[in-house]
Image (cartoon, rainbow, N blue to C red; front, side, top):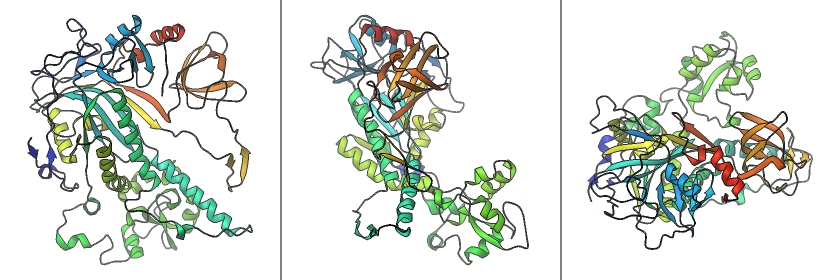
Length: 540
């Protein structure tokens, strides 16, 4: 097992990382698993189908990036289908074409709609040889990319599936801020006395704020899900550290310069007056008293850093109030662009990644003992540029760690937006924090819950057609469906068929090309046949 010194390849704004371990080979020559895949040791493993190979559906040549040293051409392919045996044990993923054949012949049932998972009815994993897959994770503040791929001893990776997680850490932060404002307001009103409890709360070592802990828990949730649907043998995670002081300085720093902040040798007000030319940043007024204003309001998560402060006259300061600068200057795009350009970019995302990287690594190491391999951000960037791939979270996840070439990457990317599983409170407050209405105790209406993924087939009326998406239940029995084309309201529950239970996420598929008609998840007629035959078993 060899090592690679990733510290020599890092960007100037990225701290040197620890040495990265090379992944070991997981090939099993001459074996065939339950989905018909035969392992080989001298080439990138393909997906076999019983006797011989069936051409991969939906693949096309992506060409080669100029100036790269990648042998051969990279290809794009549609995502694979996950396969379980009859006891729920994961087998090697198979192609959409073979999954459709198994469904048509009655040898498999649909276990999950999104991502598409089938369960074999006549096969078990006992005595089967499975090559296994590996996971690549590119953690981020707002989005995290996860790639499922296979590899051989030569360092060639073949991308099978990609998912991009959209975190809701910002929503959690905003709701906690509003809740804290309600609590402080109740203490100052003429109500019964409630002693503050903030002094009684202790935080253990390694404590993370709820908005940051959500990022770790969401990433671990999807990593464990993929481990239930596919035989995961190794996990590659990018553990990068951002030098925030160097990013704000804009120039190389050495020695004692790291101890000099932005206001070294000056004061806040004098610095802002000199930076913004002693005029109001919004209306340009001069010769009037100027106040210090937050560009991104502090009540909406804005920081007190110098880069988030500007000067404004009293009139503009009161008019802007706590509205975002994008809303305040919505009719003045040129002025908005000028202010955002003059103010430095916030470091909130970099701070979130720095705060959660160790917690994520410890959680992965506990879930996958002796199978987690770390890599630096510089190594990932070097791999991506060398293979000629564009900059995305999922492709970064595919390039994490030690690799030689990428022979294929998924043609479609599944985006999972974290929306939560509902709330516990019985009332909705008004703008002043007082209860406005009472929510029902039961969340289930006619067997459906808000957030369920379903399909409605309406034969007549103004909503005639097929509508697929997440539903919002109503006690009247007429539900709303949020589809990719918009909101459809007032569909009776008799026309709705359940595809998948609510799991706290909203799914969209980003397709960079024409969809393949052989993919089960993109074939409504095939799913309709499965629904009518009663072979669809939504689990999740």
